[in-house]
Image 1: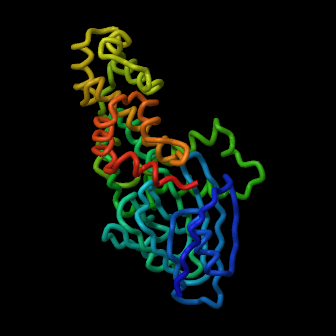
Image 2 (image 1 turned 120 degrees about the vertical axis):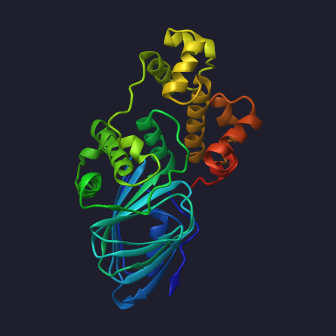
Length: 334
């Protein structure tokens, strides 16, 4: 029997718990918490029960989820999110981008923002930590760690080892955060603790999962950037909407324009103005993804972040994100 979720998806509190014996309600709650989906009970409908205990931590949603029946779930493209599942018990069979993975307590499954996702069998009684990550947050974290722009979306491997190294640490970190969901006054609500924790989760995911940038990211011999380049990068990231010119950036660096351009090409692989454009695109993307299209326009957001020429802006945005800015804005879900 298939159960389609309701169309209306209200906003969620930062922390919540839900239990239901009704597959229809389970489908609706799953869609509200994660993504639009279609839920099917494969076996054990007479003992069906779903439980979700979840907590929002910055751009990350950590959910401790369980079904007491064999179920299947089908999703469309995640588009605005990356996602990984860590079984604490049982197993989960799934398919994404033609990659068939069985997740177990020793191996997590990872889904990117492209390609339909099918959880072909969530085995009865399996307790799984389901982690939903806003796409722009993970991509910005990788660019912060790499200190240069990267091509997105990040092509993460479909699974990762949880038994050693960064994968084991990531599993322990997610388990610790899940344990905070039921605490009356969780430490994660304190910005001084919560922000480093979610940044740490993103960086450990990027270290644990295989992707085209992983070897470079973990290389111990990455050269340090000269102070002139760091000063310009800091100025751009602090206020990318500022109408910087090449001369103004050179003045911030304390060197000549040509010297700064050569240093950026050597250490960032971009010119200073190209780096500025990339950071502005990041900010536009993040704002569009979080904005209500009934209250915000692409033009407003583009102008706010320093893009006066909409045609050139749209072309650059499409090249970086693979979609029109209006598409990102329309994907908003309250």
